[in-house]
Image 1 (cartoon, rainbow, N blue to C red):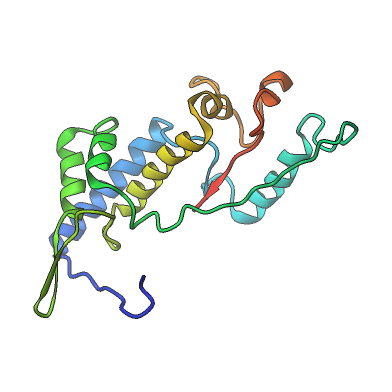
Image 2 (cartoon, rainbow, N blue to C red):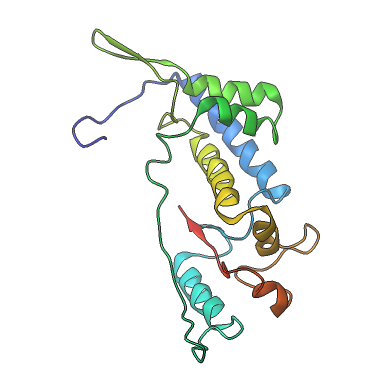
Length: 192
């Protein structure tokens, strides 16, 4: 999409400061309330080299992972959410944000993305997709990605991977082997 033109957004400095404060507040509250589960990476707890080590260790620690006696095999699937920024529906995003933040903040975030873009004598109203360059867009995309994770995994397996709220599971670990082998998706990670 951006192979020929690179958009540059002119945002007022006072709006940038407000958005940066909102971004810090959103990430602080998300961390305090453990909004994002252990499968969402990168995280401060695992820099990339340690993440690779933990991923390999997580695979090796699975119960009967290398057992091929009955003709079974291990499948490692890698895929991408294509153009996630461009495909965010702002109406749905507003409803999802209202679940975790005040309705005024949710309206502010979606209103900042629902704007008129100008280039010379052309105008475009952005009613679909996230505007790149807003200070809080990283939080919005991470939260929208969490919703997509829940759709991929299903609510039951997602809660099993994350663990109970009081004692969350460590990355790629389960409290017991019955819970681990209960579902075909044994491990899951989303790396942004």
